[in-house]
Length: 216
Image (cartoon, rainbow, N blue to C red; front, side, top):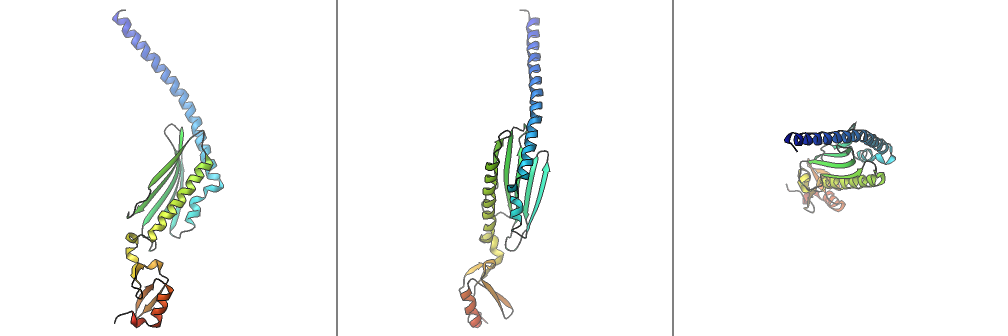
C-alpha cells in the first residue's frame, strides 16, 4: 500500500471515530436533559416531604439562629447561622445541600459545619450519594436526622468546653470550685459584687453568713 493510501486510511479512521463520538455526545445530551428532569423531581419531592423541615425545627430551638434557603439549577442549600452569644461563644454555620455531579448521574446530600474560633475537633463535612434514577428518600432523611443530632451534640459542647467558656469562668466562694457561670444554680450580689453558686446548698450557706466567704 502506498504512503498516500495509508495516510488516507488513518484520516478516514479518525473521521469515523469522531463521528461516533458526536453521536454518543448527542445521545448523552438527550439523556442529560432527562437526568436533570429527574433531579428536579427529586428536589421538589424532597422539599415537599413533611420530614424536610429539619433545619426549621432546629432553628426554632435557639434564639440566636437564622435560617436561609437557596434553590438554584445546581440544587438546594439550607443554611443555619448561629450568632455568637455568652452561652455559645462562637460563630457557627450548619449547611445541608442537595447537589448533583457534572453529568447528573449522581445526587449528593452534603453536611457542612463551620465553627469559629476553632478550639475543638468536630466533623466538618460528610456526604451521602445516590444514583439519580435510584434516590432513596427514606435513607436520605434518616441520614440527615442523624447529622442534625450530631450537630446538636457538637453545638452544645460549646457550653462545656473550657476553651470556649473561659470568659464565663467564675469561682463559687463557698466551695471554691471554678466553673462557667452559665451553669450556676443561682447568684447573689453582696457589697456591689455578684457571686455565682454551683449548688443550692452553697448559695444558702452564703446567704446565711456572706462575711465568712468574702474577705474584707
